[in-house]
Length: 90
Image (tube, rainbow, N blue to C red; front, side, top):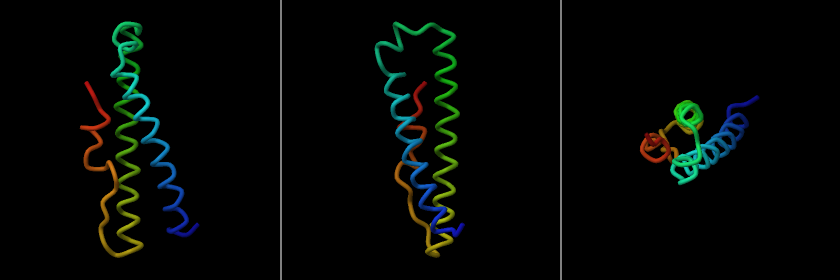
């Protein structure tokens, strides 16, 4: 598979994972999470959030690298620099 075709799939994966992370973050910031979730489940969901945020940042780094390779210049990837601040709450 060529790098351009691979880049297309990686971007689709990135968008899907960012959406998943946003949904998880919304739940973690909800009243239901605070009052209706037991401590063990909270721990697991926060751990999942941390892993998913790391995965999204890895995908973004791969997109950045591939874009640089394809076009010979660095491009910014939406949400890449602010992954932790926007999607990762403690």
